[in-house]
Image (cartoon, rainbow, N blue to C red; front, side, top):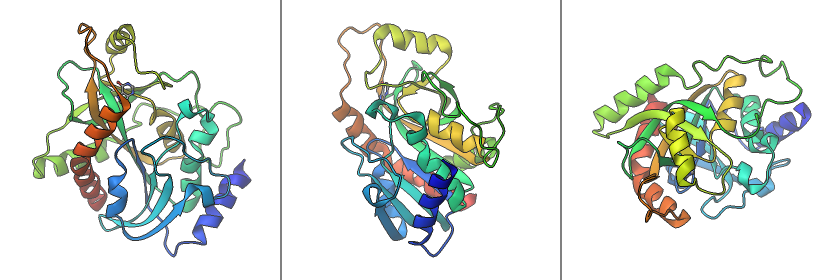
Length: 271
Ligand code: HPA
């Protein structure tokens, strides 16, 4: 396993002339930030040894190396989801590879359903914490101490300094935001009304099908993590009419994407 991470990282190092300091994962409908990366070297997942291939519509599936906010970055335009059938090791494989590329910070975005009744469609949420509601943990199995400890503390998984910097950037640019807890579960079904109620009771503010596995692995290996959700739909458990489609999720995410890009670019600039 370790060899696979290293081999993939070595392959990628052969394509670039710098070490990326910041890793970025772009969520559903949020791939546009990838186009803002300067001096791009884009490598399709299908050309990267050991990489799984993304299958979902709206996820173009490439790694983009270059500069953003004055720093060297590597962005995943398209991620691997558990609901596609990948195991946790596959979902988080690129994040392990990033470690061998020298990445110190991981910035993750996603589209999510709003649970907090104050949230509106199109809101941005800075993730302060998460709930792992997947039936698995990506760290299950042999622990590689090259990465981190067997029983990682998770009390400050989303780095408070990065959240503070992102808030400064948002405030200076007049971008409104929420702060809240993200709950991740497998999908591909959206939640039933009873599940939305349950997740609210759990204390989650937004729900989605990603992020948690990648952030667990990144935090385990000592990366500082920052996450952001675009609220593409809101749960209305008492409204029998309300339905959500994937198209809607993608459209809303695309509309809010420029604000997210501004915050992430500003944040990277201040790291
Ligand atoms: N639930 C789960 N995942 C999602 C949702 C949702 O309501 N919206 C966007 N991704």
